[in-house]
Image 1 (cartoon, one colour):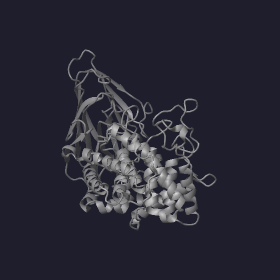
Image 2 (image 1 turned 90 degrees about the vertical axis):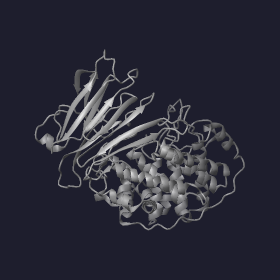
Image 3 (image 1 turned 180 degrees about the horizontal axis):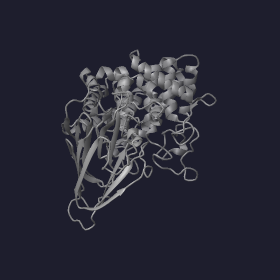
Image 4 (image 1 turned 135 degrees about the vertical axis):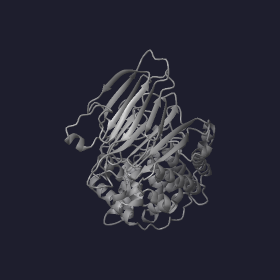
Length: 554
């Protein structure tokens, strides 16, 4: 991996203006039916959101009333469609995005130097007006979000754009690459190789910018970033990303990897690395995916959506591109998370052929094959190339029920997106057999060390390190209880009265206190779950544990 000293050396060797070197255009794009569908839906939503008086996509998702990211995604679609005023609007949008880069000398030395503002009406980070805060007043991942779209714009549509604008896009991407190279994973930053989605995006942005401007230092650095991602993925033969089984961020991983394949410079190693990772990633997605329940079995390193039928995850857009929407686990378009994610659909559609050409047809077929026999599997996930620390996932998938758990021992809690144990089950029928009611329950991560294992019809969780905070309680969230349950005037009682699923709870060290939450007491992402907490006896000196024995009753 690139050490800090090496990064400083690389960053210091680019004082002279490099010579420009233009890459040949990418192969022509011919949309399939499904690619055209998602492109059209994405463009319709973005057309509605386009503010013709300012040249921005209007959105309240990025701390203001406009969004730099959404505008970049729209610009790609405008250039592809290229009808009426599309080209002029795309140029306007690009000009606006370029103006958002923190490239003034006053920002030199800040963490956001050469990054991009989140929106046109978002204040500049300052201790006077908008306290600097990573992922708050500035988002360091914007450099790769915008960088990837600039790469796509130049690679696919350079012939449509004025030469001076292309020069400025490339120069801006070069600055974004330099910003990304300053991220070393400590001193307030968290971009390490295991942080997969920006690690993948950084590799291409840095290598591509170096190639376009004939800067061998950046080209070499980008290749090394990609090799680090590949080496961590293949470490110990696991073929797993460090940000593992994360349905939302898998969507961004696929974007970056398909761009490794389609947009990397000539003679780059990235296409080879990208094809290997993408092939094995989708083999693993297909193993986790339950077509009957339209969800991927957990556990999830990071999740917003815990039920993709009701709360979209970005990976579902790639399912749509591969399978068509009726067979894909895409939440209804009107759902807020779907409206958010599908705005990126135009950029994704342009990469659909790259994904499809990379995957084995047997993998695609598996995504539409109903579950008839149980699957039980284990996965190892490496956290770093510098040590052999490994987390272990176990998962079980059956026709109507599935569950997964993780064994993890860390010093710090991974936060609310971490879902170390989760179970899904079919909780009722709808008028469409392919989209049943699906409910879920998960363990809320109060402890940073736990052993959660799953086998058919059984979940076991222990807290082996009781010196850590959060080991005095097991808190479970139960969500998406279907309408027929309420029509029948049923009431929630923790695990005691679930539709179609019987759960027998036992444990060691529990004091008998069970706390039941009401609807609306807590929320997680777009879900409003009930919670049930089991407390550990304060005098217990052993290893607290809970066992959930499951049986399907419908």
